[in-house]
Image (cartoon, rainbow, N blue to C red; front, side, top):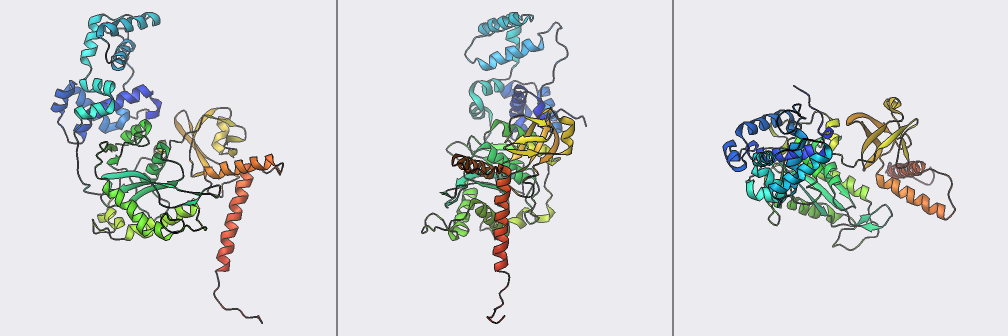
Length: 481
């Protein structure tokens, strides 16, 4: 098979044009419309639609990227002039073609391009589909209202439909400052089995980064072998939150051939299933924990990390093995019935594009990459000293970062100071703030941020081991021993 350049190597404009093409053929791909109906609605030739369908099925969103023309300079309108005309038509809804012609001639004169005639501008305008014009002039909502067919159904098998949502949890836990705060939960649920594919607990309000991290966790294989839910879903059903409608997340989802379905604003479809899960979390899990809102406030609150550990244990070993009142099956067994084999990405590297928390470009120094007061090293970096790279990381654990050079995965770099620990980005921020307070009090001892985090982690580990040892023996001991 021909290997196409990665999606990230194309410009934003090229990716947007590819998404416009995808939305036009989307009803056909989902068996909702015939190509003939799309031809009648959009004016796009059937042969062109067939070509788009073939390229998408072969290569995903990359296949719909417009290739650079090689026939510029012949008797036809030059490619850059044609694109300028199209951009002006899409950008200026109310402008007449006479105004568009005048604007493009001014641009051509400034850039020494051959100026098109009015008839050529008119012909290009007529060749553009009504659907693409509607999308450009009135946005996605206007396009959907005109051309999209609402399709409602229940999932018939695992990974056919995944649902995602956020909710503030009804519990107060300790933040990094030791103060009580209410956390948020992001969840992805398999519609068919009601099994949890991924989750994320944080104090921050929902963002596209959190959604991408949860989707990344949901798709890839889990480190815990008892949590088997994974794979690429066919449909990803969400509401219209700005985090879910992230343009980059939408592009990656389309490239993975995930059909994003957004609930109608004000009229959500099928939200009851995920709302029921949140109710289950409240009734069977949170109510027994200190700090639950509605119970008498307990001073011995747990931390967000302890809440995360308890929630993971509840989901994997209690919820997944509890018979669901609607499906009458245990979620883990319903998902894994008849030896179901999920469709997986080509590699973890290809999936890392979903980690949207991308830092600014970083320069490779002779001693590694410097980020957040830490130093990251890998033997592969020695050949790139002095080069600028892009790093991607999971804020839940920044002991390692993934390094990309010219849109290609290079290596995974490790911070040796904290490599033995799982370090949340908030740990680094908290340590830095603590050190700053010490400096203000002139109590600085010269300890680095990384050393302070490592020391804190080691002390926490020692406390756990000491606590475990005190509970190790239950034999009675006597005074004479």
